[in-house]
Image 1 (cartoon, protein in one colour):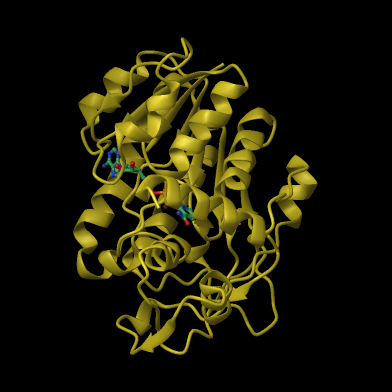
Image 2 (cartoon, rainbow, N blue to C red):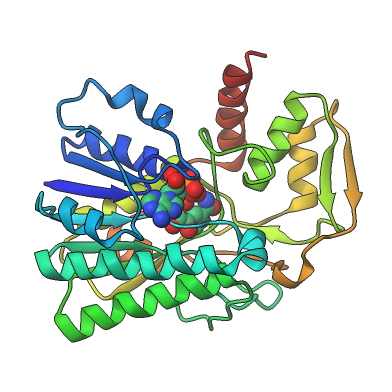
Length: 314
Ligand SMILES: NC(=O)c1ccc[n+]([C@@H]2O[C@H](COP(=O)([O-])OP(=O)(O)OC[C@H]3O[C@@H](n4cnc5c(N)ncnc54)[C@H](O)[C@@H]3O)[C@@H](O)[C@H]2O)c1
């Protein structure tokens, strides 16, 4: 099977590429490198099933059209602007990448009969009531242009499924962390905390840190995506992935800091787009795909910290 991974040079993308290659599939990557890097793909260079990555933009319809001439069985569409706060400051870029870009991918899939696996996000959901986990039927409430754009992309994907019979699946993974995630202000909460700890800086919490996250280790996330690719009979579905356990940002900081690290609080900069509770119900993924997460938060954090220590040489 040949698979195109858009955004394949990014954090989750490189793990998906790895899993696909381990299964013996032929893998193509399209990425404009605005938030990814070819270094993330270095270890696959010698694998004959890994094709030379195409550096290009999904906003450019001609590039997408040309590339689909290769004839893919499946397109795994990960390329996107992924930052909630940035999307509030710059909705234009997010809209272009996440909505227009998705439209170009959809058109190419329609023309070539390529199955589409669309990477949405848990950020499309309305905030959960206390102690309630979020299943796929939970109401949507996009509180940022990022969430709005992802939801628009989802609706377009479903419209192609219903109008043209396009085989397509929508995925809503919860917050994902692990090796290769960026650590700076643009990274996820785990990578930011870990990098600060390793550098001997305090772990800074915006607000009181009572907001919770369901943190999914990236290899579990990649395993989930690859299961969807393998289950070709499943289409027209929206499927969550998470761990079914949430942790407050405050507890996460304490867990990462351990005895030696310092944790401090500062006022929140973007409360309008902050979501107080995220807890995933992944029963549908289990029922349809037989998927469940395998890595505990403790193990995932240890693996990620080891990786960051290797990168920083500490
Ligand atoms: N990281 C998470 O916690 C998380 C959770 C749920 C869903 N997602 C979704 O998973 C996908 C991958 O996220 P990630 O965390 O790996 O982010 P990432 O930024 O590391 O990966 C996205 C990749 O897309 C590329 N890209 C962006 N715009 C592009 C364009 N116009 N044309 C071509 N390439 C473009 C970037 O260079 C980057 O390599 C995204 O769709 C994101 O919305 C992420």
